[in-house]
Length: 502
Image 1 (tube, rainbow, N blue to C red):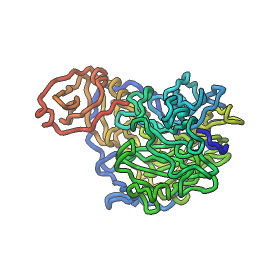
Image 2: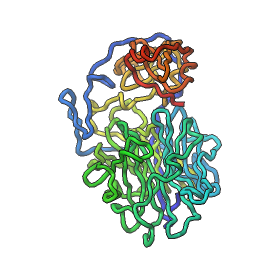
Image 3: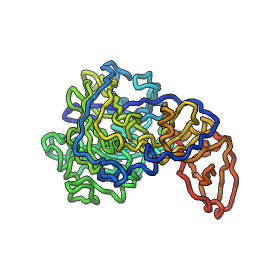
Image 4: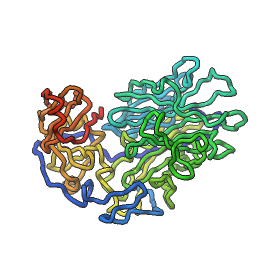
């Protein structure tokens, strides 16, 4: 959403080494688990503070050495509508799915897809529009989307504004909507905002308020970073500051913690917005599994910066990477649907592709693409590839099409059910394939058990029952439902829940 002071912002995105979905071998590989390697149960385990167990290498770090290589892209628009477009939120989900703020009649949230970041992009459509209802916080503007998918549900965090409100209180507030397909949205929290400015706007130079959200999902918690120009810990001259809440509740109405000077502590009105993570407007947050760290994308004038923070959200010394490219407003880091970094088989590389607004004025902003790969000096033995590739398909020569689920290989006899479950597909070597421990295989027509008050579950070759959340998976695998008693259903050990991606 535009700042009343005319402050210009920036846009940035992580890119992909993904391939299209492909067919797979019908033979079901049943290799024993490979220990001490990617995804292995015996590999080291990195704790929340970055330390490791005695069985693994020392994965603590106080600083990083980063270098941007293989730069790409240009200031040529990859999406051009002859109307202002900015603050994209982009996930790689087989195709690139992009949400952004665009001018229609007031700010609307638009949506498009493409096979490549360079386009062509499908004809944009409005997917979340202002309510037009007096008294609602998003009556005239919906903008600055951050979209994430967790356990089959999409969440769209956004800023809303009611220009019919009195000028003395007219300011941005932050709301959220949910969806099952990422296209049709329902406002949550009864249509009320979930974050409001910490204080009144009277007398402030920047009266924008609380908005420009960015969300990632890490270890069962949603991390919500947002701008609040009334915040207590930001730049008191121009309102620049980024604040972080986290909760297992995506609507942030319970069990909320906030990043304070003492770390994450239970939400308290007395300490709300006392600590700004970094001085910026319209930044974007993501988690990078290969570094076991958070990254924030910000505008830095004629450059785009990636600022890295450890698990406790303390800045890492030397942890800033630079991506060239002129910029206007709103970083948007391309990643997995859960807002983690795009996977790379190189343990010391973070793939970074950027989208950003270009143009001489807000009325003519288009979206362009810049990118590069960020090399790091982090110990390769510290990378847990099970986390890096979680939810992704891996395709190796003469190997079954395989989904990485909870760090193990879930193999498929046919491509159709794998495509229903996967976020994206990546080409890997046979050796890399076998570095993940074997989990289970889904044969064509595998038995599906149904019971009263229980979800359907695939009974796979490891003897475990794998619950799932959409009937499309049953059809795609050529399976049928077998009704059993609840007691029989409960008697099977449970495998991972299978969440349909689309």
